[in-house]
Image (cartoon, rainbow, N blue to C red; front, side, top):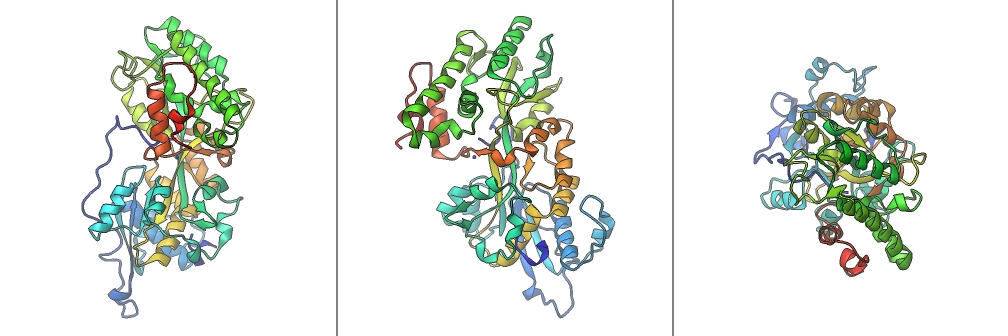
Length: 441
């Protein structure tokens, strides 16, 4: 069905090194794959460049799979079973080039510079869609979408689609999301056992007390970091925006009271010595390894796991009631098409194939799985790769049914994010100051 059609929490912390952007692109399906047939003169061959966290090899196989599905060559083969030797023999009539990005995709600065250098990708992954749109770096995709069922609620998480839509115009195709989690150091699990994945705020406090009693460590690193994400634990697990900034706009006094509850809760953890800021000795999990737990994006967990010899464990954010559903606090990463692309129609078709076709997603996960990311489509076959991940699988199982209820948080480049972060970094108790926290609203 796809073949005739097109198709903000925070990103990883800066403590871990980023992938370097290469200066040159490399052709992944050009030499030896473009047909010499006169029916396909080189000047008429469609050429696009994809900027993503995936290698040349993976993009090459995706291009070949796309060609197979476009020409009914796949037969009974699927993305998780197709033989790579079979794909090696496929000869596409188009050229796809690849540029490597970090897992968070390309930034506004990256795209601006590439456009300036006349080396711009046609398709790119990004978490900065709003800023891309405001800078006119991307165009709406509606004119190129001929099959709206691809974005129906039974196939994709519509909350992610809504996040990419402005006044009825779709600017990006949801690709994957990361979520905010609590990470635990497996060396410091108390004798009562590891905290359950879903737990309430008082169970969390008692768990930290047990760590404090049994180990000479900081039970929780930088508790203030949790505040923007845990307000739903003080509203009976009702879905709440990042730091309740949206609720503040229409119910100021009530929102101030709810935010104050979360501030007081975290403040109590500080007063009881259960948490310290990372600027204090021993509390930074990167430098000391003497923290029992800390907040992190799921995009970071593979790095954390590699960094800690005894390994880590993952649990949700505290809840009001563990019997309720988890509310994912997520960052969305989408595939966008560069407004300067000369192959917009083909670029949108290929981007939608990469993001929304189950065979494409299965082949991608099979070739180059990235731990900690949740796909934007609901295919159980695709999610099987995620839920069986040894590190992230248990957590992903809880999000499979609840991702449509996700709160998409601003990226770290967003003014709201930086204003809230600055406010909390200097918060040491007292009444909540919404103007200082949100800026002028």
